[in-house]
Image (cartoon, rainbow, N blue to C red):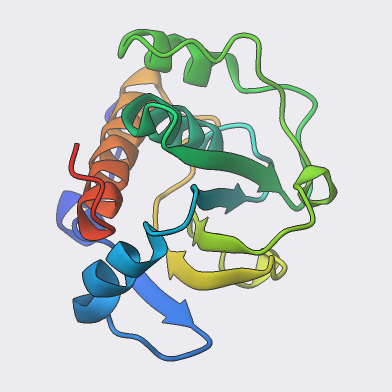
Length: 170
């Protein structure tokens, strides 16, 4: 059974929202200003913190090579990371087997530079962040491993694009 994702819908950075109404066109300049800080802080949020946000955190840690602080959390965290997430991320050389879902209360009480939501819209409560980017990425929960791979690849490309936009050319 194929995963019925619309790949064209999932291209690009996503919708950018912040307190200062900065457009996506100025994100690169703003990101360069943020890079003057000691470390950039990024948090990925979804409802259960068991699939999409865990994949995004894994890629951001791998690509950031210690130059960014990366977190993830969920409004209603699951009891475990989805085993298919662990499997498809291992295919990319990223081991999430020692990770666990975290609630938003588990995040450090600091302002993040970027808050990226995975498409959970109104179910994601506010986390203090300078920029909020909403990625409309479908949740592969209950779907085939091929669907998990498609979502993983979408997230990998989005994280790469995010790093390029903020000046962390990978």
